[in-house]
Length: 501
Image 1 (tube, helix red, strand yellow):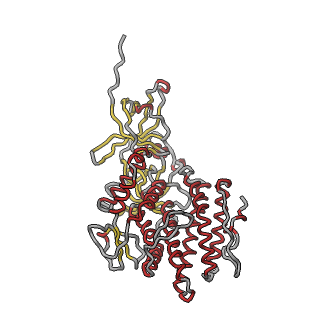
Image 2 (image 1 turned 180 degrees about the vertical axis):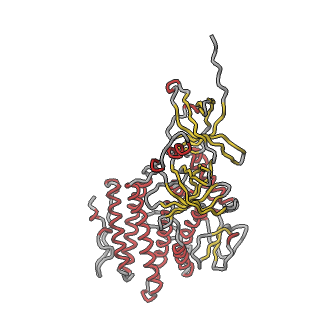
Image 3 (image 1 turned 90 degrees about the vertical axis):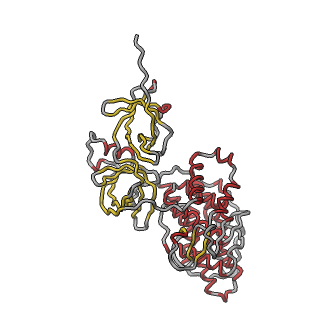
């Protein structure tokens, strides 16, 4: 790909008297993902250089920025498609794409904010007519940057929320908050500043730190599709509104019950959004979709229909250092007392700090700056107060310091190493390492096993071998099925009698 042929690789702003380059159509099908990524990296460098010059935001410069915004939209969308199509593991390829995509939204946010700030502080420029579109684009790029921060499980800093609030306040003050304007590179997608301001708030209300990346992306698609029905209002109506946001603070939206500080509040609810979702969703399509989408749909509807989710059990502060084991193999080996392995022989052994503990699990802090890969539903084991707790990751919050807060939902503290013996005629005698768990749930105790991912369940029937005894079992549908492990409960079966001669 000759990236020099793309207009945004050249000088971003035209020299005095120069006109803008004529629009160039680029057939992205002819270029590889790496070539597209390289072109976006050049754009980022150009944006950084232009922003650091503190340029005068006159009409030619603003028009040049808007042109580059629209031209680059299909290119960044194409790179995003390539990234989302990659396997969900951390690799040099996916990491490079992710850094470039995030860098694009960050620099677009910064330079649009700079242009809005300049116009407001220089009323003599007489460019008021350009302020609405610049503000709308600034809100759009900030919302996209926030989504990509959440996709990386990074914490949104207070100053970023404050920026978002200030941009919306500009739209409200100058009377164009609900004016529909085009988004870059999108036809028939006219959107208001108010809607763009609400989108990251709605995603935040669904706790993206507890979602997998593909779930965040799916929810964002639903919000984009139906969020125009949600309105921001100055007057609180408790029967209608669920969240409030303080324009004079650096805080995200909060449930009404948590609004205990004075401020300049705006309120919004999810009733019309839910109605639009139910009216616009084809039930036949939902039934044909993958199971995870149906589960996610129900979670969104439940979260927005009932009381906003809040912690239900008190947490006890712990503050102790301990060992952490990541992944099925290391956890199984750690529990199996017959396997003598030194700590350095465990592939994913880490040190962590247990922050707090509750009925449902524990919270830990882990230094992930050295590339430790942790994802939602990762299997984790920790040595904790003379116990060995096995759980799954249910929340991730990454900080710029390199430390990551991780919430672990408890599975069991009494996991027992067992083996599953195949009863398939073709695989008779094959043994699989597993863990037996006795889990406590809302409907009482349930017997479960953890087995490595990729093991054929052969119709679900196995012999569970423990302490020399064998039990015929049938595995039920998996409770969790990941690339590392499968968690399933099971029914005990009666071993058929062998006929005598």
